[in-house]
Amino acid sequence: MQTSALPDLAHTDAKPVHWLATATAMAAVVAAAGLLQPEAATATASASEHRVTTQQGGAPAAAAPDPAAVTFPLDCGTAGQTVADSAPGDLDGDGGPETVAVVRCAAGSGTPPSGIYVVTQPSGAAPRVVATLVDPARKINVTDFTVRDGRISATLLGYSSADVPRCCPDELENATWQWKGDAFIQSAGPAAGTARGV
Image (tube, rainbow, N blue to C red; front, side):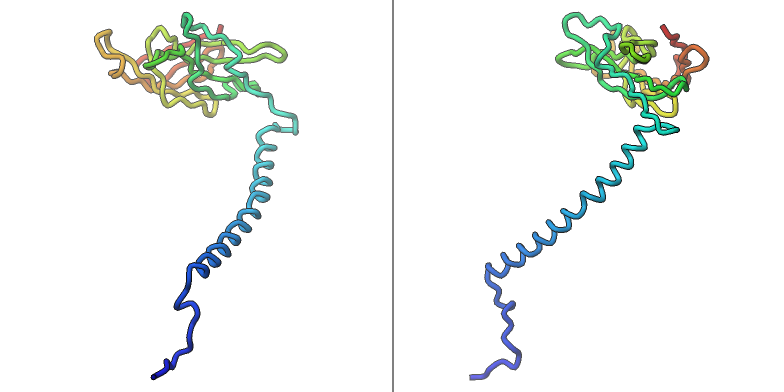
């Protein structure tokens, strides 16, 4: 009988118990690495939260008005209203945030027309609508809604006639509003106009 010149290696004939031990050791290393991660992430998040909640001079930032606390000038009967989207921003440059809300009736199915409203909340008062940018009576759907740098932008989808199926809008308008003097001025798109404050 001829013997091998190479030494007998235990791992060349590994049994399931060896693989289980290796997998357990790897899991322990991954778990230990995960335990070290949250502390660094928490420190970064706390610093970010501090920057967001303080203004120049260290005073706490004012909270934007809550659109859920407002009754919008939208007749929905018994269906009720729903805020489809909202975003805060200092639109008039006074240092206090306003909230812009896309609101529609809470229909069980389909996509009812939307309105775009600007909500403000004077100190100690309830939030209220101060401007209507898109009246739901126009039968428009709102998409791609953003508020950035004092500017409100949205894509408005509409219908050229009552014969166009409500599933398939055939008109598109990219609209932008910005506060100028005492009104929100709409620019861009074919139907530019003005929405005055109330």
